[in-house]
Image (cartoon, rainbow, N blue to C red; front, side):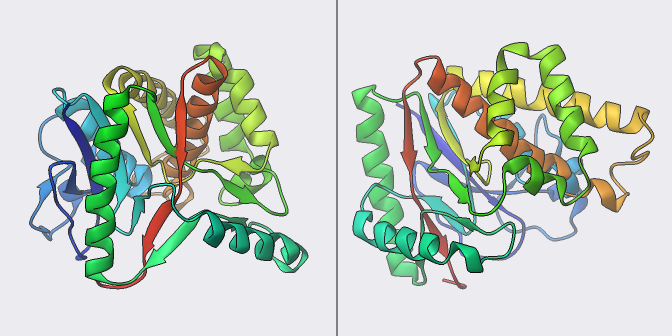
Length: 281
């Protein structure tokens, strides 16, 4: 079983490698610095769009250029998937957050993520996760692995995602999905009206599901970009600040929508916590 998880890097940082994880430099086509790893500008790519597509340029690269892999995934250079092993840690953390929820500013959220600050610590954990994932995939139980959702404390996702650039991009997203991917529309409406988000665009999927996911994701985002321009809201997405990082954020909504839709339709999904690297390990 060939499993490939690309780890998106955009600056100098610790690089973890094994037969599952490998680093990939995002935005390589528009960067003067090479980080000593494969770039998302090699082969079929959208690397030039990294300023607004964020880590999704790595997702696109994985989709188009890792065709032999049986399972494909994406992590971030500071955020990785974790095995289910921190029940008490997260239980105490969750209770603390929700007791204090009224003190949080709008937009605060709870995420099941544990900080790791040592090279030895992350190496050991990631080697263990690679072994765990291989064994779990061999059992054939799950087609999709995703992060456990973050929980917004004081607002729904429609309100939260309207903050960077107003509600028009969100309404346009809904319109496009309803027109071109109607089977996903109900799930997107549910996601936007709720408070749970599978954030960071981090997933691991079987080849079949990953192809479905990327076709859905990039078809919608491509159409969204085209309509944003034709509407006059943003005439040059690569230069105008109003569009900066917006498709990356919208991708989180579409990723959550896809996962929710697949789960509703009987696809087995495993939800995992994550590790966050706090310093230059």
